[in-house]
Length: 332
Image 1 (cartoon, one colour):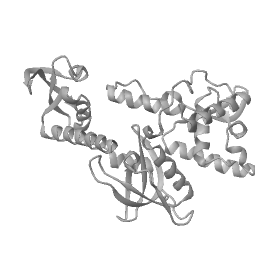
Image 2: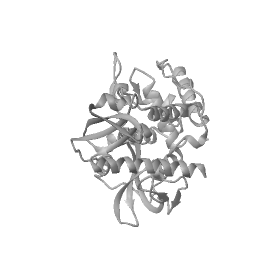
Image 3: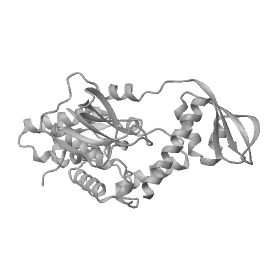
Image 4: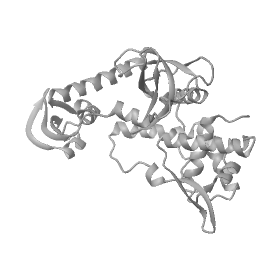
């Protein structure tokens, strides 16, 4: 059975992450599922070059180097230090979201492919890291997998060069609208996935966050009709669309007594204040963006409230309304 491009790319990432040595193109062809289907050396070379460019567009840090100390043949691997996230602090809600994402690896779609890829690498004599941790977590229901269905359908449309039609909303509180897009590629930045392409209805380049795209995606038109224009940097398009202006300001936030310790660590107490009958403190917290601080405040629910400035209060209200709308939608 033919392996899809998405599965082949996942196999390649697993292979290059799971070894410390540089893998030659020939070793990859022999041991990574999907490349053995190449009809000729030229076909494999074209496929492998496209896949390397695709991974780089997605932000995967590919490294090249000698495959051994006695060979000048070039090999490939992924720089784990650049690929993995640095140490970060998470709220309890964010930690729960990360735990759900980690458990996806034990879903039937992913864990079987990952284990198969590792077995083939070991059989080919490739040194595989034993600490990968694949298959050590429990499975979660399909409904918790967020934008995974949209990701697969959109990557397939990009590969086929076909127009797509889907439902999209700009924020969690906005209603869905139908968009028709000529997809150029999918990019990940700061932990989020974005589709970049030409919006047919608006006749302009647009960026769409995958978590806000509905799962029902319709493919339109003939294969090969859509291609990314020459010279377009997908990551630069996403950066321009998602960059947040820096405010370099100070927000005043109320926190309940003995609560919201994360906010307390970030700010300084400037006053005591009872709010809605609950004793607490007023903090002054430096912020480069109101969105960042609003996310932290909203994440503490009734234990924190934004006081000043108005921009911060509005950001918190928008996030809380979005969370309420999502909860009500899931409850129906």
